[in-house]
Length: 221
Ligand SMILES: [Mg+2]
Image (cartoon, rainbow, N blue to C red):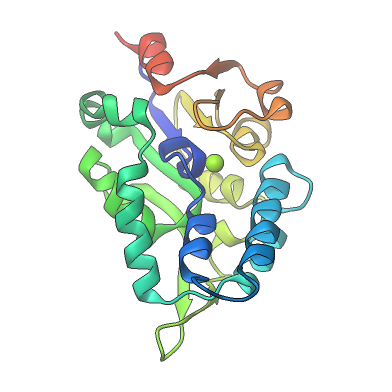
């Protein structure tokens, strides 16, 4: 049966890529330090996903390596519309049918996520993620550190604050997604491996999803 609430991660789950990595790659353009900075950003993303460092450390260190402005964000968002994970794209009717019970909880960025999930019937009020802070020249200065999603354990803090009742399922590829069950109110955690498989996350999962189609088969009435 479809649960009362379904929480879905965004980066490497709903889309095939890590949005901040993509933003860095595009915005660094011909920057002389591009290669080194991208490697550093990718390793910080991974260290955050497997839990070697806390999410707030991973995010703030990555932000310092970016060189992006508002136009870069808009362009990369439009590119990511073409990077929706194939099984999610295939199940658009299923998601639209259950849209009022779906939440996107992401360490990514609201303004990049909302345009992508809106075609699935998921409203901005159902998206919890980080917010960029821009300077007067439209360059990204950093992230809003008051937002719980920018903090260590942010997903758990956010979901606890939402006060969701009933059966809660979580689908994601990272340790912070599992923590919604381990430290939060979720009843089941599904490790999502269509884009990336992390053994330490899979070991903690109730079930492993090779794709979103597997989940649809499990909960379809
Ligand atoms: Mg993810």
